[in-house]
Image (cartoon, rainbow, N blue to C red):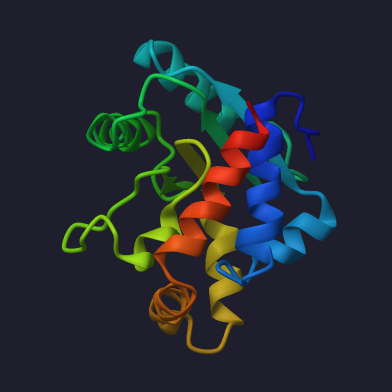
Length: 185
């Protein structure tokens, strides 16, 4: 696992450990954290071409390093606006397909202002995909398929997570996310 060397990466690692794993948002993340198979990388996205090249390089890194299970590519600046992030995400997904990575890697998307299409911005359910910084999470599809095959009722994961976020409430979740960002400044 790469050790976070910048404040953005340290905050992202803290988010993975204290939110994603601690709240079991991703039931597979704890194992990978314990195994040390997560890679944290940071790139500025104010130049989209450079950010997209970094994404392809991360795919190549995963190709060459099978002991690394997943990469969290943190976009430290340039896509603060959620709509800009969504535009970059769409291009990133098309680029992965163009580069022959469709079916090999999957992108999971996270942003501080993530908002599901039919949700209100203040809906606590959005926190299932909110993170301290915008990021593109590269997942190995084969690993994901294996994990889901052995997990009872994987289709229930999103609904369970949304229900847990509703229980926790917007205020406490927003404060916890803000604290992670503030600690990195």
